[in-house]
Amino acid sequence: MSEYNVKGTPAQGIFGATLGFFLGFTAVVALGATAKFFRDGLLDSGGTELLIGLMIAMPNLSGSLLRIPFAAWSDSVGGRKPMLILLCLSIIGLFGLVLVGYIFFPLGITMAHYPLLLFLGFLAGCGIATFSVGISQTSYWFPKEDQGKALGIYAGIGNLAPGIFSIIMAILLILWGLGGSYLLWFIILSIGTVIYYFIGLDACSFQLEKEDLSSGEVIGYCSTEYGQELFFTHKLKESLSLSAHNWKTWLLVGLYFTSFGGFIGLAAWFPTYWLSLHNISNINLGGLNLSFALLLTATFIILGSLIRVISGPLADKTSGILITTIGIFILLIGAIIMISATANFLILAITGMLLIAIGMGMVNAGVFKLVPKSVPDAVGGAAGWIGGLGAFGGFIIPPLLGYFVDVMDIAGYSFGFNVFVILALISLGIIIVLKKKMEE
Image 1 (cartoon, rainbow, N blue to C red):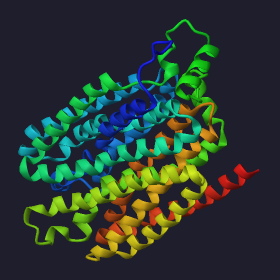
Image 2 (tube, helix red, strand yellow; image 1 turned 90 degrees about the horizontal axis):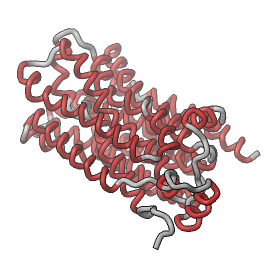
Image 3 (cartoon, rainbow, N blue to C red; image 1 turned 60 degrees about the horizontal axis):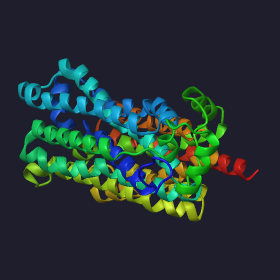
């Protein structure tokens, strides 16, 4: 019997964190999957492709920026409370989208509704910020030698959420329409949040913080009984400050901007890309044209997520540097292929998409394998900076890709992937510097 009142095990801890992140991360495709329903009305009433890209990316704005304070907060109170708050905000946003689907959409969406769509997308995207909260929560449960595997499982399974929901939406949009699709999504998120409330558990040291124990007693007990090696020693501001003053944090931010920011940015952008550039709407699929585009997008998300799961243990056995470097090269090749895949070269585009998914999945796993080693005294703060500013790429990239379409018309869909060529080359430079400094 436990000497102290500590609930759960590392396995239960990672299960709860993964569930919370899985639920919240579905918001990546909250507006991207349904952009076709809003696009014509917005364009006809004065909108542009850049503004549509901004709308698609809006969930990624809150989902990226809120990672920073919430991850650092999880360093002081554990992940359970921050996770619940973020999920509840996402529920409010999705409820608003349900009302849009049932009330405003049947009457016609115009630019007059654009600010409302941005606001609801921002709220729904709060759930995306659960990622860095769960990273911190998981890291405290596991010893350093097992964190690559644990974080790979956590992030990989959680990353499957947008892909799975893209498939669900592909079916529901045909059967139930826009309002019904959002309604089921809202119900699932609400029920899942209640489940997390009952099963979400913080690591041993956070559970004992209310006990009348010295820090030495807590560390001794938790390390012996639960294998915990990371322990909170700083307040929220100190955690952010410590990690911000570590130069390795900012190199990892740059890498994650390319890999994870690019990943969630493309997850939101791809439905528009497939429908617009490759004439999927002209393929003889009847009412399934949007569904086919969402299925291709789901393939991208699921493959990238599974690769991340596989790459975590590989990073444990080799190194985060090696896995990240290989992933960057694969991403670069995939981006070059996407530039070459002009209109109607569907098979070539799918090949490039798959390579980009593999490359980004590997880099995502490699980067967070390096976090506990690089910033061991402020994991939550570092996870906040890296996860928050890195994921900010998911907000920047869709409007940027939309701008290329505004300027170059249909050719802009292919040319826009030069963005990923540039980011991959910058990332290669970063990993070279990081590797050299770590070897010194």
